[in-house]
Length: 398
Image (cartoon, rainbow, N blue to C red):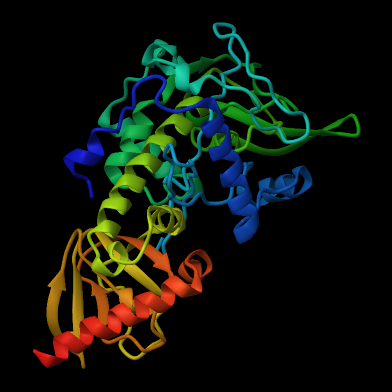
């Protein structure tokens, strides 16, 4: 799906997305996370407990790739069984300004939700992003080191190497001096930090007493929750020595995620409309609903995606990589990018006709049967069953 059509929208011009849709996108992400109960956003107390265990990684639930267009933006990301979703960009989407002397803090933040209530992402040009005024240069060794540090972080899982390097490319260098407070407990988060050098203390103030949670030295990251939830910081980070940090501004992260969501949505729509079962039975509204339900996942070489005889619970679209199709243990065909399988599972209650396994690392778009049944009216599903029956009857006659 990484075709020319999709690439045309990789850098949408200013004004292409509304502030309302941007806010809606972040709110939808938050509600999806709560609904799926997958690593739900922690309360401050829960977060601090996690920090003792994980080193003040402000935990955020995984995001799921979903449709973000003029018809109703929504962005999510889910991880596959072997890894997101993104899932998109489980991708997020809103501008937050770095709390820096050089930049005014014009966003209005709700004290109740901690989320942006006003933003101008749609009016921003490239020169308006704070990272364009900073030093973003990195050596290949530095890029590899950043990837190594953040690769296990939920917010960055599900990315292709090229996509992850693109995000890292926008991280800028920030020098800090001994005694400098990088993050202050209670301040609204607006950036994510990866340590390049230096030593840092993580402390929590409670009941007028400061408690050290942990110390970072030479490596580590903090502030990741700011990328998806503009919430108050749960702890303070203070530099114990001079050092340097790599900074990813939340505005940029959200912008990147939103663009990825749009690309994925258009890609999925093209694929869905090429399938007769869908194009002959579903309205535009139905198609858009299905796009919102699609999850992006990655399977590794040798992973079994579905097994012959087992109940079908989803349909799959191959975005990248190759899949082996086996019947009775014998390979009968190989499928690649832009092909699909398992569509009968959506409308028929029958076992899988074949076993499908990954011949290489495979990126898939998964449409769960449960979501399909929730979104598509029973009358339409009945028509699709009839369509399948007629189609296979004709095949049998031949």
